Length: 140
Image (tube, one colour):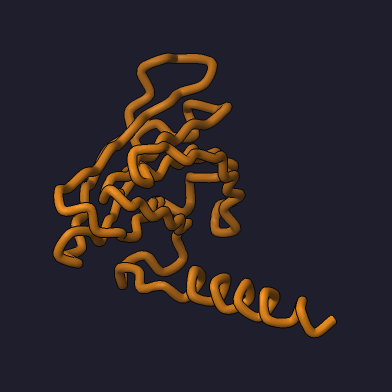
């Protein structure tokens, strides 16, 4: 039992750090997602089974990399497919290879619900990817 306590404590601390990591002040109430990349690169792909749900939504892609300067990229999602799954992608990169954190913030909380986000972090040249589902509690 004693051998298990340290790993569990470390896991709990890492989880707490992930949740409490610094985010932009205007992100309160938004959906927030962290990725880290050893090469200072990260890419986000977001999609929805209901493209109209994302039509015209403004997304903020935030990353704190390189010189620990927060970089905000405002992107307006426009539905061009008309039906099926609407997918958009954003990629950030910088030189120097420092690890960093990144995030996605849905600015229009009232409209975004049930969005699936695909996240890739480029760690030493290898993409580590996964899907994250967001059911926005602030939407009606």
